Image 1: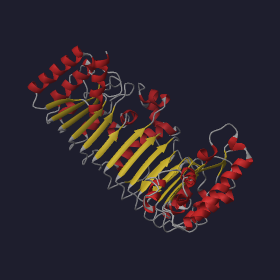
Image 2: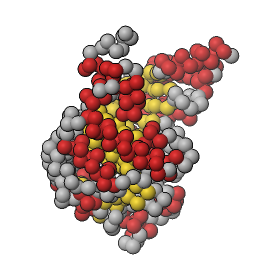
Image 3: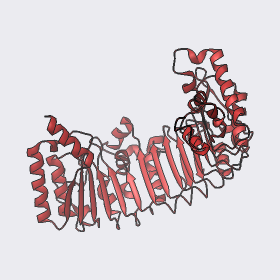
Image 4: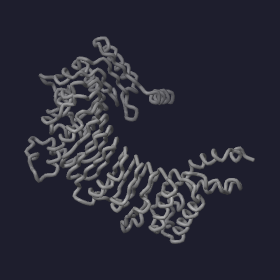
Length: 478
């Protein structure tokens, strides 16, 4: 007898739980003992791509599709009334919607806690699977993920999930009113993830939940309004276009926020224009968004940890006068891009009176005459003024390439941050760097030694173990 077959049933079931259901079913040919083992595995993973294979035309053959549905029926029948902890169903083939409903109701009735659904009935006709509310009065479901173009609007007002803590909606169709009703049926929801939601109305969206603790939004549409009534929220992440307005932003207990706005080339051209008269155009949705974006930042002004991305800095440059003071902000992370500017940096740093840690990923940015005094890109009389009022003690610089321009920026920070005690500079791992040149790296290290002597700040150049091994390997090969 092989060693695996001699293992206890509980351990064998645990091993089978790491396989797809089809792979687990195939183990029944190994030995008689394995035949009924599948019935005791509390994890069911059905993926029609695994069953049908990505062969040309195989998904379109009626007998193959029928065979797949029969396979799922047999698997569920084999489990009988055994408890199911997790059920994952991914079907990108034209199936019988009534049978799909039956599969979902089956596992809900057996106490499933994790449910992952991705179903497309007919991709050519863009026919969406309408998730049936039958059986969704479930007291055991904790994690629910729905994606791939499903329509969940019919669930609104028909379900109540008393134990659901995590809801992930990815590329699903719903209108804003249905969405609000849906959230009210989830009284203990803690985590909400919204990815590319297909809003079916005028895009007036409100996220309202007293229990919600984390929100992650990826949006590829421009919403008319976006409101948050989430008093218990501690983590907020937004990736996407600016909404035209933010009427309500209730996040009084927020701890960590990450804002990654996305600008089109046209938006960027307007933002950098010679005058801002276009901002007064009430008919322009983009202009309204720029005028009202300060409301979002006003709502998160008490956050201790804030991450901002390149396009977000460009947006903030247009609302510098209305930028709030971040009284509780301790750590600010900025991601730079060679095509995006730092115009907002001077005001931003002045409005963080208790900042302790500043993280800058990439020092190279787009230089403009509005770049301000936060950098040394343009010679000016008020050089470094915004830095002198900033109490930051620790500065982390990531993505260091070893250029002289970067070295000048580092010297600028050392000269004008009055309270700086630690500066950690992390070498870029993926992109090209001049530090591979021995002469350049020697010169850079000598400059850092000089900086340490001339400044009370401890300056460190840090290289990850993996990057150091890569350099040593390349040096040996050459």
